Length: 160
Image (tube, rainbow, N blue to C red; front, side):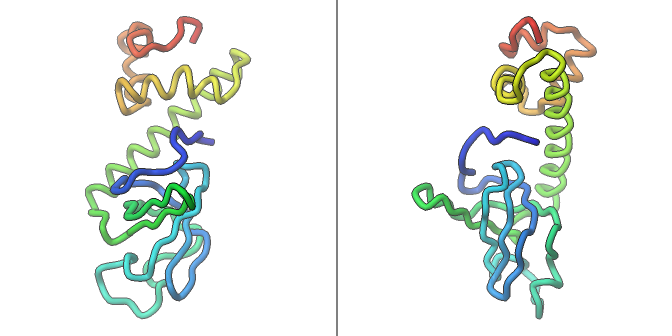
């Protein structure tokens, strides 16, 4: 389980989502990076090519990389686009997400062994490493190769 750092994504941000419901007018996604926050994918933002049925392009349960096009912070609603994401952006985001998920799982296992909560693990380890290195898995790999100084430089407490 990945804990969200922010409540809502920013406009233009790439996010990973899981298709939950498909309708004739669009689809609803659960944003994996934001605790399953519901986002709407309008029919016009599904694909730049012509399609007869939206199910030709996406299916329920499918993981997709989408770009946020509108965020209403008052109503907590998010609209996203699938067609505005390039193949290169999609590949980079999927690679980052896989590495981030693995790193979070490693930190959660260590937190359990130390008797720390998942929230403490994210606050004390994951977010500081993300601020300093962006790629948490890279920071953990670097700590294995170069030593624990990498973690201390990012502000991770000594007992981790």
